[in-house]
Length: 542
Image 1 (cartoon, one colour):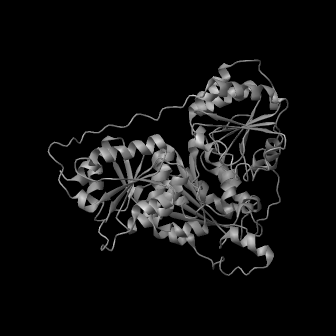
Image 2: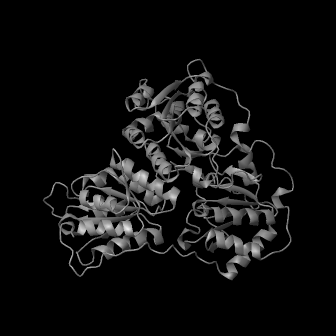
Image 3: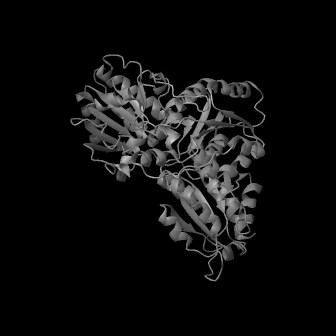
């Protein structure tokens, strides 16, 4: 058996059951070996799409997925998706063939490329060590929550495995939960007991049913209001004390209530400039606590008064076990209407030719089934689906925005859809991101995904239009002639509808009620007279 086959078999045995990629000569045998031993291979049309599909699948499934790419350009094509995964600390395995001869056209310093975008690297160096090195890469991805590039030199892949080499492998044990110290729990409980208006903000580290249950129980005991970062959207869905997403996407009432807190506890949440609106959501006299199982994350984004090293679920349960009298806290009165943006009155700016993005978003929220998984691309439009489309839980929203790249939204939703086949996948894109990622419309159709792709089409890069336009700068570089994106989708085998008015959404209702045998694309011509409400806040960081 050659090294390429042995490594592929070992990776599948180690629990990597989904592999995304574009196959070339350098990763052909490795990928086929994984498929032969039970892994599902998903062929993308571009390595960048494959990287983001693998990232999203890992986030939604909780299992390490793999990205398989050709040496050299296969890896460089995937770098934006790898950067997003690395910044998000997604435990993703990148399998890259490697040309080690400097005279090869495919030769680049792949280790340096990975490190430049925040990934860590491993390499298969010999037939004797190949299986162990591959399994070590899986363990590192899982236990360190890192995106790991496993370089597979072409000459080593082609070598025969020694007869004495073991190829057995098994899934690594789950990452051990970090227990908080007694002193940290005591300090947290003391802060909760002092607080009159506590707010919990849950982030990526709290994205699990166990964390939700522990946090809602602790919040009930101390009268805390509940909010999330964007990546944990949906965690507290249905809880009457949920404020939704904290930060730029929040309603005015949500922002006001968070700003009025005298204690903010970030649970597995970085409390970064997006979640805290550059710190403006933290009142001048508020105590800030951060709970995270990674000590290096504490205070990394802003100064905190108390940092607790511990698993979110275990820390919340330990704090609840400390007992004490139940308190009304911030729940002394109802939080009132207006927490959800869709419930806030607005002046509809729709015309005969353009639909207000708020009107579009509210209508889609009503039309689409509640059991959904939503993937959102980046751009001026992104606040509308994030704030207006409800999701059933933390696994209903996949937000690949740590790198703030446009063009990842469609691939995000493909990966999420494969991890959650029980839900309707909804990809929400701007026209710029839709055209960047259009090749993956083929992947949607080929996989038979019953996906709804919604394009908020303002015929330009709206973020730049609204940021620079008011100052009188020319906008020719960021505006474009009309494109019939619905026609493009039909060419890929989609059903498609162009939406200019609320009445045009009848076609979406009909698709939802029908067999959903082919995916649907909605080319929504949205009104673009004004920038989205969150845009001014977002650009303060530039």
